[in-house]
Image 1 (cartoon, helix red, strand yellow):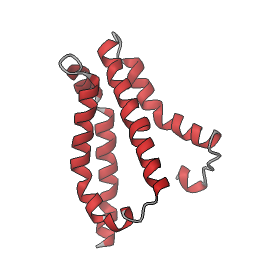
Image 2 (cartoon, one colour):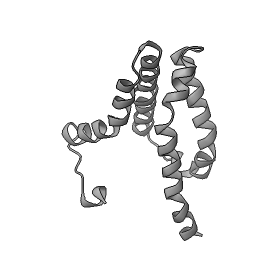
Image 3 (cartoon, helix red, strand yellow):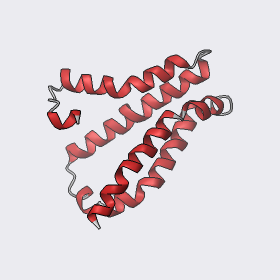
Length: 130
């Protein structure tokens, strides 16, 4: 059973990468009809619905969270996800050229890794590069 689960994991990563890479087109169309905040709220609700089974499966681990864990989760959810996604979506509503917001979005993982290495002194071991 464990081996079967490992074989499907790359497909989930690929699906996530595809969705992440292809969200600009519908997002740019939605900004003509809805506010950026509404689009991000709806996006977050859909993400929550999809991940509820994972929360249920891992509920014993979630129940072990301390206040610092919850605080980190809230800061990441509000600052790292919601605020950044609202600003990204707002860029589509105001931009005449969509390439800049898309480029910044695609560079986001590299920026996050650099900040983690520089500000938090995170070390990138050999396993990270493989």
